[in-house]
Length: 157
View 1 (cartoon, rainbow, N blue to C red):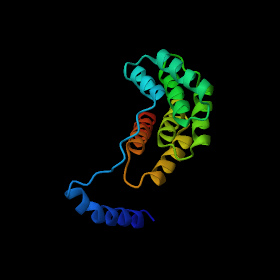
View 2 (cartoon, one colour):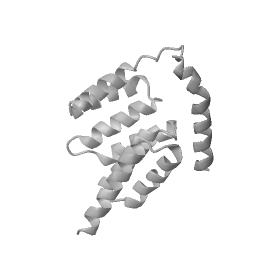
View 3 (spheres, rainbow, N blue to C red):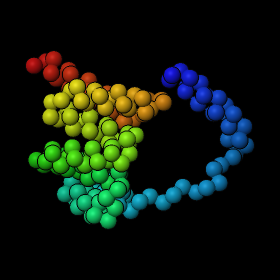
View 4 (cartoon, rainbow, N blue to C red):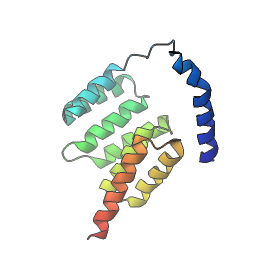
């Protein structure tokens, strides 16, 4: 199945190549980034986990149906000191309920499972990412690396 998808992608790229070579561009400008996501990511980049949690929590209060907000909120909790893993799992799962194909939530949920010693569940999310990513994507690559490191650590015990 992946071989067929890869062929289709190749054909689509080849068909579009003349337009790209001629300077063709997408006429629609990119949509502006969501301010809650921008601010949360900035706090995460500065490793200000409490601030990231506050921003994402405020965003969720206004828009509880936003999968990205749930994903970022769970990430900020997980990366902070003494993470409440029940809350982490609740928000990652809510992100996936809202968007079953949310690659970031699958990656981060897999990493959360590794934090709690559940290699099987982490590998389940790696399999989902393998299906979601036509070509290797960052989320798949990062979770695959985390699983390999976890397995190596367990083997050395």
